[in-house]
Amino acid sequence: MENYQEISVYIILAGTFLIAGYKLYKKLTSPVKGCNGCESDCSGCKLQDLKKEIEENKGKKTG
Image (cartoon, rainbow, N blue to C red):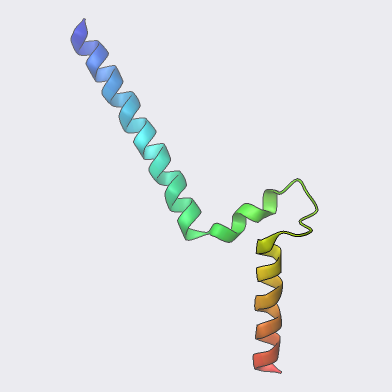
C-alpha cells in the first residue's frame, strides 16, 4: 500500500511543478497581458503610465 501512496505523492508533486513552471513561463514571456484583467479603471497604474510613455516615444521617433 505504501508504494501507491508514494507514487501518488510523486504524481501530485510533478503536476504541481509543471503547473508552476507553466505559469512562470507565461508570466515572463508576456508580462503586459496581466493588465487586461484589472477590475479598476487603471488610473495611477504604473504599467499604464509606462505604456503611454512608450507610445509617446514611438511618436517622437517617427514624427
